[in-house]
Image (cartoon, rainbow, N blue to C red; front, side, top):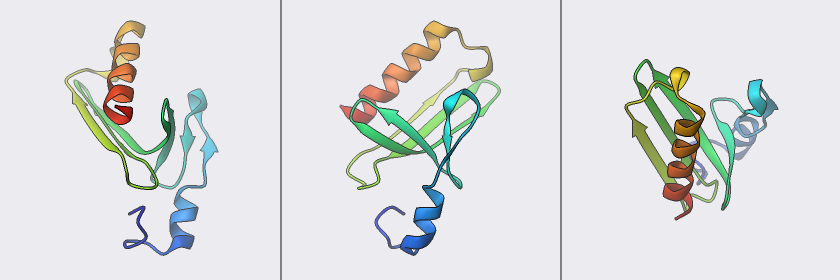
Length: 94
């Protein structure tokens, strides 16, 4: 998608134009902008009771990562959230 083969540049630009939502999350049109130690990641989180999936890529498509966990994000402790964030950051940034 980010390579310009799926969408015209003007549509991708619209998708990547963000507004700040609850908790400071940067929402675009079907994408979330996430700051990670190695820069910016674009993608989405998804959850259902008992499951959490995070899938992101760099806009230059040089890095992608997806993690899937059997955790309910709505009942995770702060320690579990921090561990999940660290896991994703390590997977994405190396």
